[in-house]
Length: 102
Image (cartoon, rainbow, N blue to C red; front, side, top):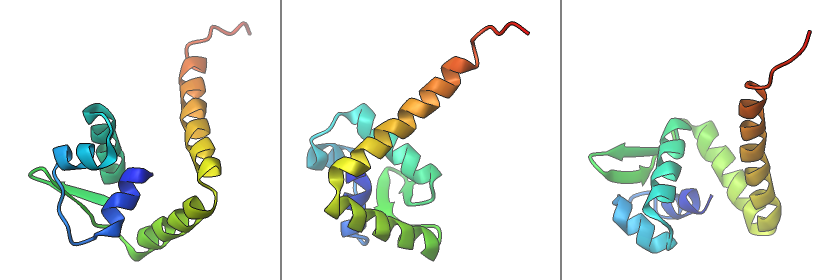
């Protein structure tokens, strides 16, 4: 979320991954994963290591704006939703390996 907000705040700026790591005070692997997720979501482009906010559609940009507003009002609620979504994906993955008796 913080990565998206940083990139969205200055739409015209192209960032490098090391710049983003420094600005967010995060680890390289976490920032890299965030970039990959935002690229997949159609929110960010990464061309030759130049990362910038570039939503694939107006609808994506609108939703990003709504998320930004909500995060501004209730950051803890947004963080919980992000963690729960990741937890649900992990649970679904682990459930795929459970042996079931029919």
